Image (cartoon, rainbow, N blue to C red; front, side, top):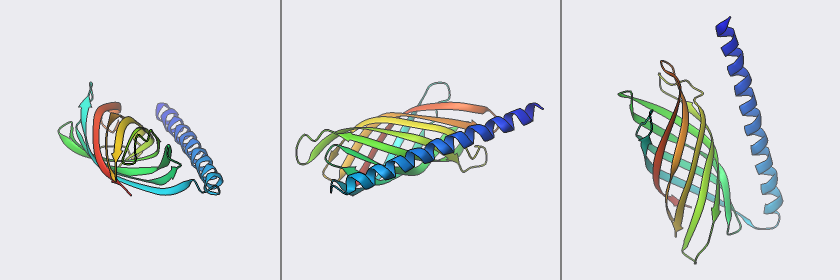
Length: 184
């Protein structure tokens, strides 16, 4: 009976998360179509390579490779869908792979033609792809500050990933994250 309760709880939680994510994506698409009619929207892609230094009780170092595909809206805002590979190599002396899938939003403060500081936030969920991590790992959130210089970018932020490790249950892992990348 106890197992049935947790199975039902997980199904309901997953369904609610998927529905909220779908509504958010639909609202983004509708807003893009409205703004693009005014000529303010242009494609923006990004590729980042980074490293996360684990913090707290469940600290784990990780190497990350992410891409964001989206749009820049005017000079001050961009948004898109991101995905990547997070390779956890100090996770209980074993390596794990999680694929984060998220929505990214950035607010820019153009200081001159070549340099733009920005605030960024990623919100989504992770998907476990290795044996010891549940395939639906949970919420991922990554606020950051950074700057764009020409096509290059650099940022520092905090990353929180909720993980369902099969032998330990739910864990929240935080880290300071450094990323460098290119924008196209």
